[in-house]
Length: 79
Image (cartoon, rainbow, N blue to C red; front, side):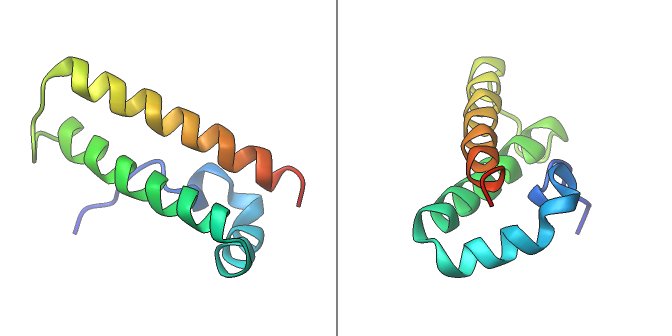
């Protein structure tokens, strides 16, 4: 399996422990993290032409990934 960029551990390397803890204790955070992971994988597969998609759809997914990342950071920055 190839390396998928933009994983949460790479995006927030100093928050790995907090991410793990929040995934176990905060259902909302866990849902955000799971959704981020799914969107990120789809974007990566589109970018690498494993599962190509129309450019507009890919751009929309990147925007969604950015929104999810911002929401995740808002929670992480308080922990």
